[in-house]
Length: 123
Length: 107
Image 1 (cartoon, rainbow over the protein chains, first blue to last red):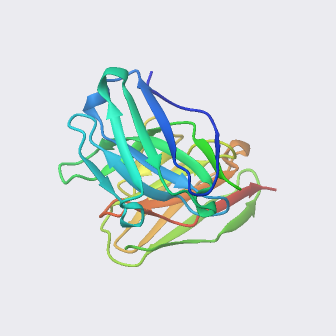
Image 2 (image 1 turned 135 degrees about the vertical axis):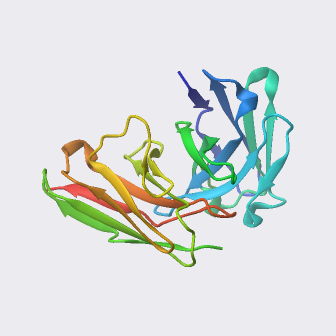
């Protein structure tokens, strides 16, 4: 069965970086793009970006451009997301999600999600 | 960016009630809307996509409708396990955006 298993909770200081992982199993890793979404306390879900797991291409929300890097390791069926220059507003649960296209127009759904990683930024 | 506004933000209803949640988009998104259910401490779960297509395995009491800028998620007969927060998401264009969520409580 499809599973996305994320790494454990992190506590970081402001200004530091954090790299979280998302290990996929139960399907061909390079067939599906991996998306990242975060949810800060009391806030709505926020799309961050994606990685094409086949060729490594990425796309980021403008808000995170230059501060977020999404990569993948096909040999490990794992996607990674690194956030640098952390600030308190980055305290959130970070989710990876598998993207599945449902039409030829490039529209997609997030059909499987990781369990989420709480990243706390605090001095 | 396309803004999504959900209403209400909170509702309390009894088991067996029919419940409707609305999601309004700031511009025409055709039918490129999905609905997710999220329980405390859990990841969102896809319920409906393309505004009205039920995801495999989702109970038939859930349904979606709408097109353009106004969409609804309906639960025809609310069950105890439906206590959760519901989110809409537009997939018309990047950046993908989500609504603010509707928390559903069982009386």
